[in-house]
Length: 190
Image (cartoon, rainbow, N blue to C red):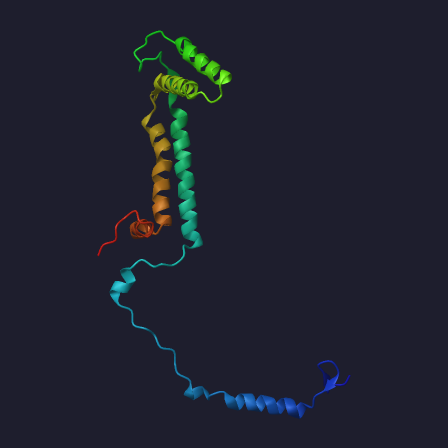
């Protein structure tokens, strides 16, 4: 095999290559002439400032696992609450129902079917639906059945741990303050 051939069959003598290498070596400054690395001085106040660095994978893990723990804690807590119905106690009606509210609702529907541009019909339907919705929500009774202290601690512990993880994921109290200032929710000190 011929060593003189390279680059698509063109001949290039070894002395030309060595000459180019020697020229490149001469163009570099000598090792002793290079300047050493210089370290910038750091003041103690610079160490206390919050870095504008991007969050690390560890910070993201704490943040998202904290959100997951908060959601889990809320699910456990809400699972324990029992919801029942009362009979229009907020409206002052003791045994009433929705029967009388059907009359204005049907009247409004009839007005809209007859003339689709009738604003009074839309108003009657809207007010009637709002009263029905309020009546349903007002008649709900939420109770928290008795539970042992240990059960309550197990329900609330994920909320506390999740909140701590979210704060830690944001960089601690200083990081939370930094993020609130960055979003404009907290005024900057001047």
